[in-house]
Length: 455
Ligand code: HAX
Image (spheres, rainbow, N blue to C red):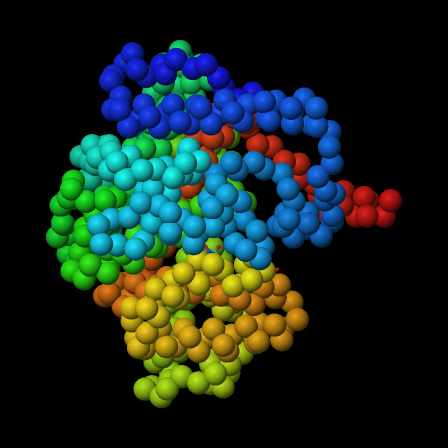
């Protein structure tokens, strides 16, 4: 059931800011519009067959099985992701921007994912003020992060930091109080989503400065937008374009429907009513896999190694073709290429490529990445098994960052995780709003499959 007619219960406990009330009313208004649709689907069409599961899908990572709802975004294999029906180019064009910037603000995409509305400039300003109010890390979390060995991978540090924040969960506290009703779950999930999104750049910047900048920190600037402030706290470049590249990175990576590993993990863990901190920490652990989010780190490593092996020679399609073949022959994947669902060049790659071509086309790694774009797809196609030989989001994100001096590639997936918090937590809000149950798909044994296959 979609939850209706909610008196916002938290209102009695503390005064919410106007912008949080606005968000709640917009989310609830949208839910009321969608409620008849959900009810009809459940009651009248619950038995409608969407597709049949094959033995191949069962063995093959559940690829293509339609079995989950994510209200926030939808992925088309050829066209790419749409946030609430808007392409990424629409989002770039339509979302409010920081003064002097051409990039749609990622926190505005958070608003869009939550409410299905493009926020006004005033709404994004108010949202940023609210996020700043919620952004301080508890002392215990700072101590936990600061005490970690500096050689602990930044993604491990981020998941530890998110778990260290878990005791602050409003959902967790309300659930434990024993008085939380099912139709109130989404309100407390939204509370946690806002606080998690507010804190994650502060946490991520602290990790960066601890690991790579001798623990010298740059304070958060409450006058700045969410992503621009994160870029400033990273402190690698004073170039205004570095703020823009960070805004672009965070806007493009925010959501990719719910089947990818990080989003699905967050969704699955959240379905057990684990709060958003538990759920997203689990999602971040999934993002840390080299076949998923860590591919951006791996991709930059691959490009840097290739450049080193070139030893100053200009990269050519011929030479890159041989490097790609060598990588395959050594049993490794070529990072930044291929996709589980996309069957075309990733629009997130296209937008980053345009940004790089507009702003730093002569950067050696940008030039190298351009040659890769020509050389690698034919090599992958020639294997006869790769379903999508085209570049994905991770093929260029690191290259854009290193141009501004952020060349610590071990950190790249953390930036991805700061962004993905927007989509994963909005999705949790909507899952609780729709009253989705705990997930429990069926698994079978090989013998069971063999028996079935023989029928
Ligand atoms: N290099 C080498 N081999 C590749 C490949 C690549 N870039 N992409 C696919 N393949 C291989 C697969 O490993 C698989 O081989 P086996 O049958 O021997 O196991 C075969 O081609 C078929 O795979 P597929 O059906 O085309 O692709 P999958 O859905 O199985 O995998 C992956 C999708 C993204 C994991 C895959 O393309 C890959 O490993 N790419 C490189 C890593 C990468 O860039 N990951 C990031 C993807 C985007 C993302 O999630 N970002 O976070």
